[in-house]
Length: 231
Image (cartoon, rainbow, N blue to C red; front, side):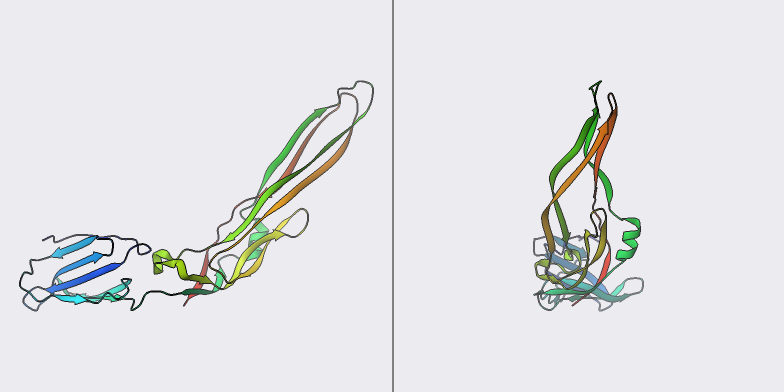
């Protein structure tokens, strides 16, 4: 029998199916622990308990919440806490973000300037002025998505619902973007749409004159931290 052993499992995809303990045979302290997950992983550590009374813990849902006990030189007692029933629904409410929209707007957090198009043109006509027009309309996909994962805390998160404010990013004018608050009541909030980027500028070029043009837009990704109340 092993004296030391460790067992790790992912509570989002596995749970405890059986848990048994034994004393040391003299009523003094813990003698052995056996744990088996639903996927068959096992932990079996302690002394030989052949012929001793077995104390089996009712694992209920299989979701281990914690353990309790006491010890001196050895483990005197040990107990485990399991969620009584499986999770039907988890609601996250009162969402509070670490950073406010005002703070993000000041720093333009998560946003950067990207080049959409570029042109380098020279008026090759040696006798007349030329009007060079830098123009184009290009369609880009834009998406906003809010999601959360609580699998490693609660397990089986297919029933998680969210209710409260989320950070939203939108256009405040034709040239700037801003963060604001939006509301959601679903497990995952997402919005996908197409954005038409249209630009045009006309420049008079004297014979032999050269012009450099560049069209830019704001793009980026931001991942924020938040706290919420789970019920």
